[in-house]
Image (tube, rainbow, N blue to C red; front, side, top):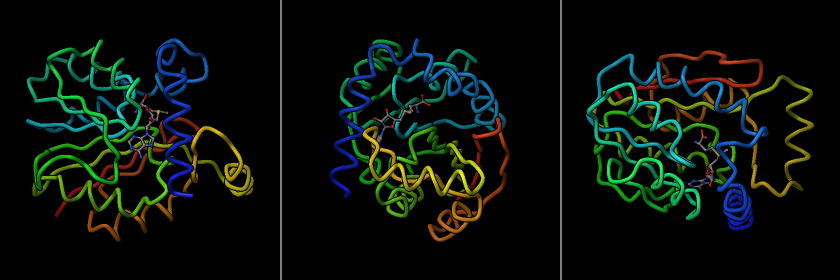
Length: 205
Ligand SMILES: C[S@@+](CC[C@H](N)C(=O)[O-])C[C@H]1O[C@@H](n2cnc3c(N)ncnc32)[C@H](O)[C@@H]1O
């Protein structure tokens, strides 16, 4: 399953990459990016890593707000990274990589972002544990992802076994809290950005 879902995510987003920033399908994601950027900028940081950064749209908003932080992004899809490089150029370090094996040293980042990517991860615990590893002491994680109430969530999770976009699972608030805490991160905030999107902020203690 691990390999299949990752392969499907890569295939799906590689197909979507060229039109991703204009696609109506992803308009709800773009609509909440400014609020995620606002949360990111609510505390100072010198280094930020966006995991599953896609076309680099969120990093671009953060950059346009005038931060002088060093910007990093990784994504499984080479085409997504190509789009991000076209957008951010030399101003960001962008790499093709798997979120489970981040190519960075321990404690390298003050801030880790992960938006609309987490539900594609076959081993979410491994990703959270690597997020924690690359966070500096007192570093922050900001994660945004879809969630819907039961029974819709249960139905979607059944359907996602067969869907072709690489989605693995949509989590409840309780499930996310358990996963984040098991990885050794302390939850500082949970907020709804719209009816089907949450934002979670956590700290490395
Ligand atoms: C819906 S897009 C979100 C992109 C961007 N974060 C945004 O907010 O617009 C999901 C992204 O997660 C990436 N992704 C999926 N699984 C991944 C993995 N295991 N490691 C790294 N990136 C992954 C996909 O390639 C895709 O670019």
